[in-house]
Length: 432
Image (tube, rainbow, N blue to C red; front, side):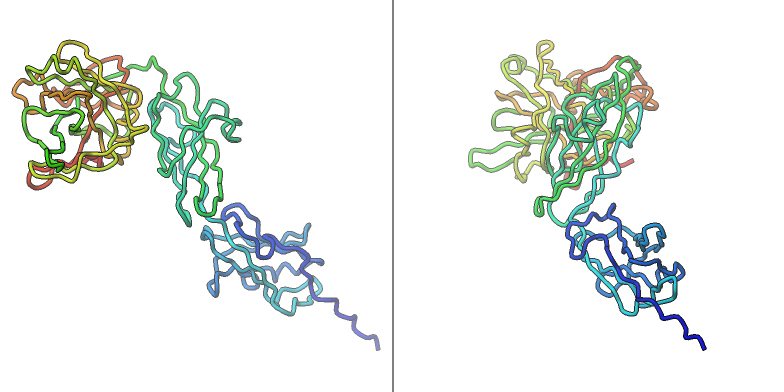
């Protein structure tokens, strides 16, 4: 009688990925596998015998067998959590091609990294026909600590991908508003690097591309409805007060002014070619205006304006907040425009996530407000839009569209009127 052949040894694990107790394992691109010394019975290589777990909770996975390398591959079917310890477990029921079972549980652990890779770019990758003032925005912002972003841009895709171009922005906001227009004769490549400020881990996003409309693209313009203007100041007791609802408003060394426009008529898809704000001195203050330097800044907080005490003069970024300096174009008439202001307005119309603008002056000056009886002296904000960006909005003042070749920018603040006639000078998304 012939004895049955002796059973072979149980399968032996010779290597795993990620390495046991590995830390900062990338949540989205790290291969998970176990390699064996001998071939396995592929019928036993399934989610019934191979698990990925967090504590006792199983994570949905796909399991496959790679015969050439004798590897069991584990592919998560959900996005892995950040800074989480995962356990890979192999059941004792895994067996060799000869039917010899593993016989005992085999497991190892790894811990994922601390932040997501920048993703979901806007403009979307490959977008053509953008505004030269398009803001850059991105997602993938989940992190296990405070995060900062670095933005790079240029015309060389490889240089941008490798971060061999100048750093455009570093900060905690997941949006970048340019201070100068993007090039209009070639594509722009851009990329974002995320940095966890606690763990100091960095993750690079892909290089994305968009192109702006040519400078020769026809332009239309429309006037935004100016709804309100006012100013905040410190009284002789150092208390913050406001003046609103009159036919004039002031700004000066101790007074910050703001004005509100309605952007609800402009579609978020509108592509700005520029903007221009013009202010007229209140009658009798033309000479004072000629002797003052007026500047427009972006605000860092909302402003409740009423006839009573308010929460404080709006604050700005004292280093980078200036957007435009006024130019006197004739007696009593001031114009403010710049690429930086046009870009800020483009971001405000598109995303509605900013607090508006502040006017400052080196000497106290007075301007006619939106309710001045002489309509020709009221503040005028004209926005210029590329026609190929969609239908030009109707002129808010006359209901017509006007052709133009626009450039530059104009400051604007907008907000919402609440009970008591209060004005919140911010850039919350307009109701539509």
